Image 1: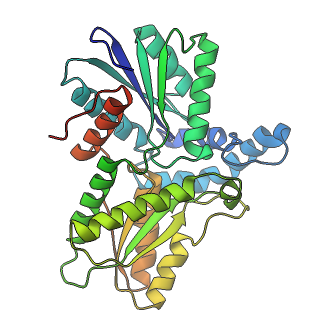
Image 2 (image 1 turned 90 degrees about the horizontal axis):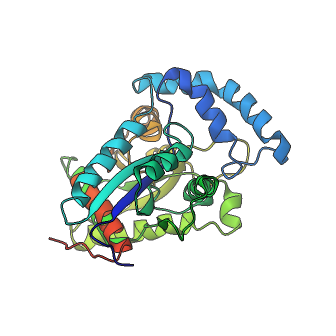
Length: 337
């Protein structure tokens, strides 16, 4: 479809959300574990009671983690900043855009964002998942919630043009930006040889992959494309590994875990290590606590100098990547220069 100049085009950035205070940690965890797309806690009728119990049992430990990174999740502030930067970039042309933020498990909830964009009278909408790698537990759950909110609002696709961007793991500008940040980070190591790369992705229950979830294939596709650029464009000889972090619960998760991989590399004599949080587009507890505090401390105890690739956040080329995604979706290619 081609955009019409007098339309207002809405763009919704979908993300996980995070507690905006220590008091919000327990209800945030309850919302998270109430979602059966993330974890099935027994039969459906027990999902919410068990989620409530887990939220109570985990809240003190989780609150302590957030306390160490400033007392809240930074994900809302960063996603809002991404939205503001994207809106500014999109409105540099002749079309009119409004960019919104919708969070799955904390404010602003997706349902509230849907109400706002309807009240604002946008003519068409592009829903952009901030998870580059599709999984039913992330993009799938967020998009399903968005569609439920649209359905309850009684707005149909015939009245309200809606397009979805649900995966972009191999989008060339995204690959370019990741490779650029990795090459920049590796240069911080003062002396050769170049350190091995440890791509750390958010874990997922193994059963999801067994049932056909494409998440792992998408992660590997991104790594393959990024590694190719690192070799050809930046002349970086590569040794790399893939591991998984942030698992929760007793089910079998993707392996190997990031902590186990760090210890294994130390036993093999690794002294420098560059970790790339491959499935994340902004800083949050997984980068600021798990990697920067927990894994870095573990690495130091085992004789490894660990550095982390900086997050995409509001990096200029990442905002340009989001802009190009939106422009390609509405049928107007964004010039590369």
